[in-house]
Image (tube, rainbow, N blue to C red; front, top):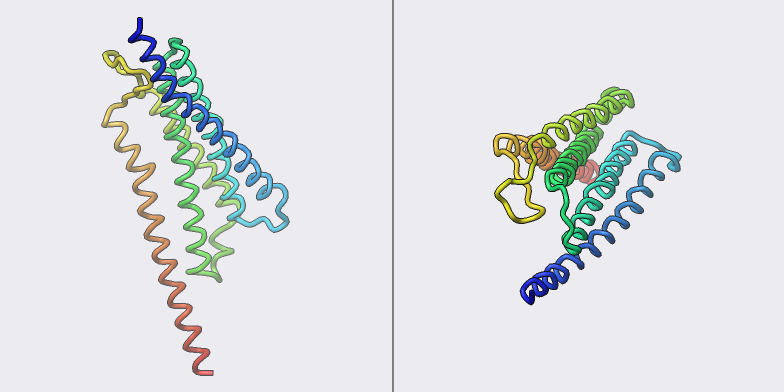
Length: 216
């Protein structure tokens, strides 16, 4: 009996600060991302392609705050109160939604980076290449693919039957690693390389301006 009380005290001591932290992060995220969405989509008088992409990024982050954090807060509270929960459902909601929305965030960041690269590298052709219709199609494709990621990972994420620990989820490596490579690593590599190109173009333009100024 004493050991059980000690274990419950340790669990409460560890998880309660996590609940407070996640709840605080959720509130800050909801307020901050809602503000970004309202400003970029509704209040900004000079709406640009980048404004819509930033709004889409904020929407993805807002959905993370409304799905990922509440699921974990409920799970931690149930653990503290020693209440059983559906661990398979927890795994599907917490992991699958996070991966799907992570894809939306990273893909939107990639779209913003490509937008900035075209604007700097090809300023004259930019209005012809980057149009509102194309951006809407890209945003729709991002969300459509994220729904596919959500459905795919929801099928395979589950609680291992022989794993006594709560909040422990597992997915087949054949599913997880390809998803992580496509969702995270490849876009980050492309974003990094494009930013290097943008930096190189900016340096060349600066040197050209300095040379022209010196010649004058």
